[in-house]
Length: 130
Image (cartoon, rainbow, N blue to C red; front, top):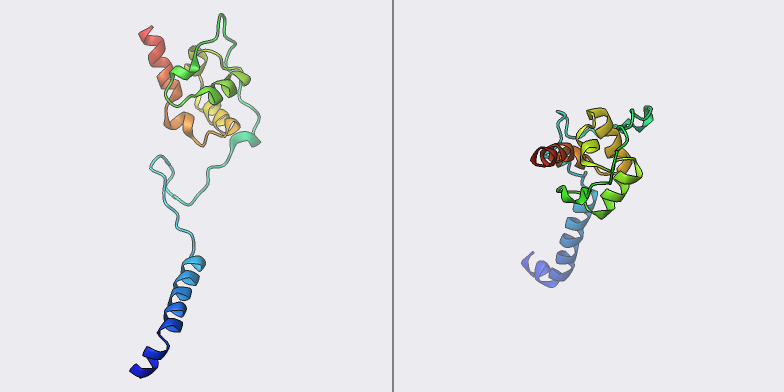
C-alpha cells in the first residue's frame, strides 16, 4: 500500500486539490449580517419603496445652494444627485421625513447610506452651529 502511494503521490495530490476546489465552489453562500441592518432576519432584503408614489418633496429652498459636500459621506457625486432631486440646502436635508429619506436612499442607490451616516442629523447640527 505504501509503495502504491509513493508511486501515485502526484495524482493523489491533484485529486485532493481538485476536491477542495469543487467543495469550495459548490458551497452555499454565507450571509453575513450587516451591523447597520435593523430587521431581525439578516437574510431578508429591504424592499425598495419606489413602488409607492414619491413622497411629498421637501419645500423649495430660498437663496443660494449650500455646499452639501461639507457633510460626511456626501461627495461631489451625491451632492449633484441630491441637487438633481431638488435638495440644495442643509435645511431641506434636515427637514426630510423618514419616508422621504427611504425613498431618496433607493432613488440615489445609496444602499441605506443616508440613514446610516445620518445626513439629516449632520445637516441639523450644521444649522445649529451656524
